[in-house]
Picture 1: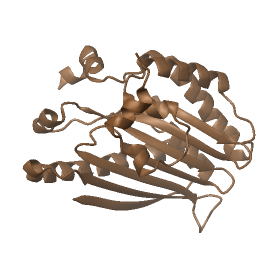
Picture 2: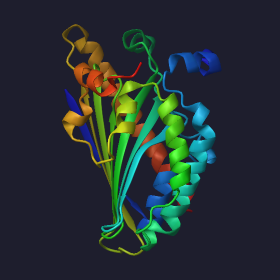
Picture 3: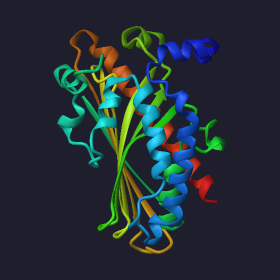
Picture 4: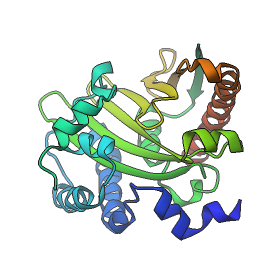
Length: 102
Length: 174
């Protein structure tokens, strides 16, 4: 049981460990949560905020996110609720979207 | 083999507060112990429509799913990645989340939909949460009877975790 919690075991079995981005992630999420609660839900949704935090965090993710299924979503436009075929991954689709990565 | 279930919950807090808490649910350090199955949450994408007040967000959720040894043996991993897509409409005050697994799809499809709306009886102070979960185990003829067990485990696990999620939300809101 304890062995599963071992750091080395965890990182080797989890290919998507984005922990190098943990600080940038916290900075972005804190900024986002504040903006959401204090502005967005109160009618001030016209201006996008936390842009700098988002760009730094996203840049880090694009370097460290190794999971192909997840990096697909990093590249795609956020488009709300995914349709079935967006989620049903096919290996050919993965190959196409990851093309060029060497 | 599909299992589906619905749940409803009334939060006696306004929609703005409940949906703010929903964003912080997995990240707040004091929730980490209760929601120990959540390993990481990353935002993969976001889009704001400034004219309509709609916010689209895609997050990756990594879940630790310990199971019986035979599940490990078959699946070969004990973490599962889910993708959560959220649409918040600030103008009409609605939040919709859809979460699906992107790993282990050979074995199981889980889809969870959650909606937060102002409660019709008290729209400025209460929030109605409606949740629908469906779990489908891929038919693997050789593993059919085992799949039944895994499916039941998934259902149990999801029910347990959604109760935990609700407890965490209530604690944050108080």
